[in-house]
Length: 206
Image (cartoon, rainbow, N blue to C red; front, side, top):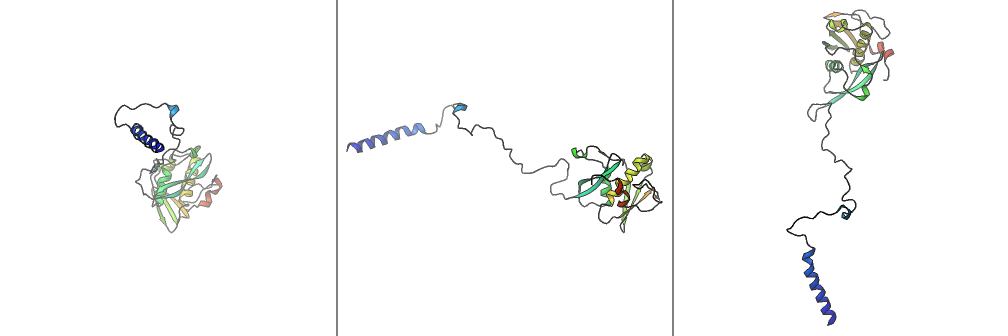
């Protein structure tokens, strides 16, 4: 009987103290010392939350736009080297030449590269049976030194012949066939097609 009274008394004490353990419904919050916070709860977050979308500053087209990789050729010292770029699909010969004319995109990997092709180049490309005919304005070559003329022609030929379906390039200025320098420094005949192989001797880093 004595034990039964002890259990009843203990149970009543628990019921009396239980409300004191619950979360108060009113009253001011008290600041807890940092020393009293369990380790890990007060630690700084070191994992950056993953973003739902990734935006590339290089592209301003809407999400879902298709791109294809294009080989463009730029100048390093007195030679040319390949730079790969994603261009909005579909890419034809004129789109490829436009991408080349736009020049280099700011990138650490492009240090030391340049282009001999003026950004103001006005030219069109027509492809027929594997031959790309480039028709430019007279200002294109007149604005370049003899060295840069050879490098600019190399840039265009190597870039266009890297595209499927193009094996040769012919150059016209204001509708008239012209001679162009090859990679070795010799000149083609007026209207004579030149090829990728005519400029392999000045390619570096490809």
